Amino acid sequence: TSRSDFLATHVAVNNIELYSKFDPTDSSRSVRFQEAKSEEDVLSQFILRPDDNHQLLLVVGESGAGKSHLIRWFNERLLNERPEDEVILFVRRSDNTLKSTIKQLLDKPEISAIANKEVYKRLVEATAVIDENKLKGEILSKFILEVEHDEDQYEDDDSEGEDKADISPNEKRKLVAFLKYKKVQSRMLEIDGPIDRIYMKVAQSGKVASDIDAFFLAEDFDFDDDDIEDIEENADKDTIKMVRKLSLNPEKKDAIAKYLNQFLDVVIQRCSGLESGDFEEIFKDIRRALKNDGKRLTILIEDITSFTGVNAALLNALTTEHTGYGNEDLCRISSVIGITSGYFKD
Image (cartoon, rainbow, N blue to C red; front, side, top):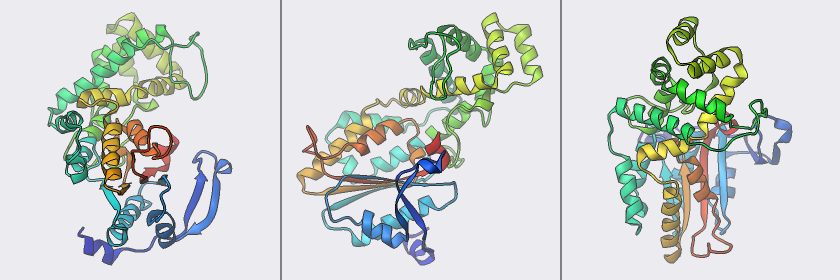
């Protein structure tokens, strides 16, 4: 919609709850520090800030709650009422893929003018169109490669713990064989399978990848009786042992999904030609340039999953304060980021 249509049809968002600590899994651990506020209250208190304090605001809610709408409204009001020394970077959901998001950033004059041409070049190359099947195959191959070369391990096979994302060396060997088996690869690559979902969040596509789970889920390792029979008749012994373990132990499916997900960022970066520090360097370059010009930065991101694969690097960049040792040459940054409750919890 046009800016005028958006503002003309906007309905006020009220009863916004503010937390200094928020736990979507256990509300008793959340710390609400103010009574519910209207959008105007939040705008005046946190968004239109005349002071020089670093801040990171997460706009948390269920899918469809209106997070993106609220963040766009903040942006529209900022454009009208911001101080002269405030620079605004607004990242739309668009089709909500990493490539589309990088293209948005490349169109920003603050980024196209940065001095770090090597990083800028890698971002341009990351938006190149790659054949869908080739990129999907590359994503799966790089996951397998990460497992093959992962040397971190727990001491015993039966280690338990909800937050542990590792498996034994013996299981890693079986998992590699399992992921290389054709029947398993077909399952991983099929429409709405884990590799397809990850691809959708990375590459441009005709589909809208707004609320796709771009990571492995426990149910991705559910195999029917025919698949299991095929594996037991034709696969190697390691693949057979892995599929039996997965079929008999639902908790193992979750453990394998969590283990593979820890490689998500590095796999996407390598498939995109990016390096882990690229986004941190870009935002540091922008903040140095703005500091030299006596300006400050507000960045609004409608959906954090637009940065699938570089989330950690982005958050490192946005949580870096402008005070303290070595940071005095950075301008203040105020960040507003949309994130679903489920994504935040996981």
